[in-house]
Length: 112
Ligand code: AMP
Ligand code: ZN
Image (tube, rainbow, N blue to C red):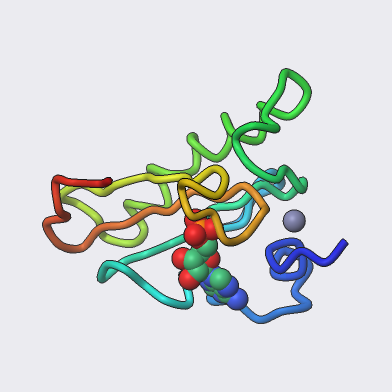
């Protein structure tokens, strides 16, 4: 399967690692939209939120357990935003579930 985030997880494409455990891998976005912009991805290929189910939702739970640690490690003491895009209307460009962690400045209130 030709998935860029699967290749990043396997180390076949370089990335700037922020965190890793047995369920997820986090790395800095190549095109940051905020002073800190980290992506967290499950180590199992799940294309988007539409494909989350009872068998794989442990990955999502583990990601959300990791997010506060990743944010603290990144120094996001004053808050941060977590976003996931699903499908074309949300402009999902990489079809491997990922959560954007953004912070480091006051973010705009309007998200859409
Ligand atoms: P989305 O639009 O939600 O699918 O977000 C995909 C994100 O992946 C974008 O913010 C891209 O900048 C980011 N991205 C794409 N390729 C890479 C890469 N090789 N390393 C790091 N981030 C990437
Ligand atoms: Zn993948």
